[in-house]
Amino acid sequence: MINAIQQIEEKIQEIKNQMLALGPMHPGSISKQYHVCGQPGCRCKAATKPQRHGPYCKLRYVHQGKQVCRFVRPQWLEELASQLEVYKTFKSLTNQWIALSIQRARLAFFDASDKKLLPHAPATTKNATRNRKSKPQS
Image (tube, rainbow, N blue to C red):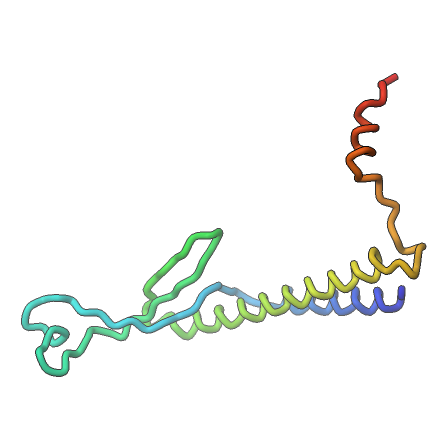
């Protein structure tokens, strides 16, 4: 069991090292947008085969619960796409780290077959909490 925990910790350390090697990152995705300007006589309002303006590239992401949309200039698309890929790698590594941490906790805290690995937790029942509060202070 301890050997399994050590193996998990080694895998977590490998993930941490990979995360340290990541470069600049950015969340989100890029989509292409086409627009109609609405000016009379414009090609985007033509009666036959209208041609919308674009494509314009738009970055969309959510940060701290807020949705953000930004237009991206063509000269920055390649760099931004690279940062989006780095972010996907970061998220993947983070998910692996969490899964390994859960697995480690399961081995360390929840495996009843090895009593010496179980931590000594304070009583958390309502009665235990009530009894601690009601004891007179000396």
